[in-house]
Image (cartoon, rainbow, N blue to C red):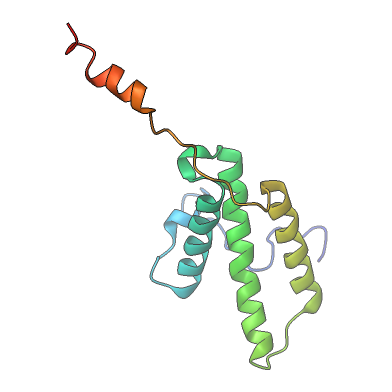
Length: 132
């Protein structure tokens, strides 16, 4: 690609007012196969790591990226298995990027924190006034 290129290949120019509108995963039509794959993987990864409420924003960002890479890898793998040509270097780059992000997140499932009160704590908080 030339250094003086003003627009990247595949990138659309800003519309009308010159403002750039950034899209997020939430902008996707969740009925498409690609979106379903991304959201299912994202939700499964978050659950494996203890649930979305227990994860930092940083980990949620990594999970979104892992899920997008996963959808891209699944698409490329399906193309390969169907006998279509794929760019093996791109496939390996995606695989390596996903592996590194997964390693950053941790590869082991984490149990949700047990917040069940002990019987003694339950009785003390709910029946404290009954003893008087």
